[in-house]
Image 1 (cartoon, helix red, strand yellow):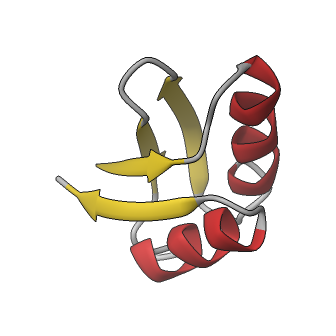
Image 2 (image 1 turned 120 degrees about the vertical axis):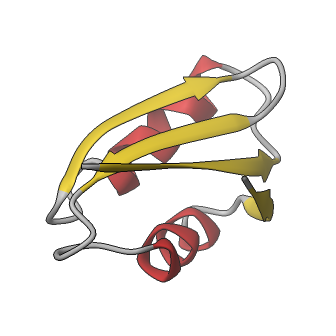
Length: 71
């Protein structure tokens, strides 16, 4: 398993957190999603053979949020 942390702008409430989780968790290979609303950090644990950062960014952007960077 690998882990990546993305910074997401536009999340303002727990509903936003749920929306982001709902678009990321169904992606094949995603094992877990942890979100810190206060700083906009989205930590994703995943199998790199099945999923990747481009898929995560696209899903988040499709949900109406902006990915501003990654660590």
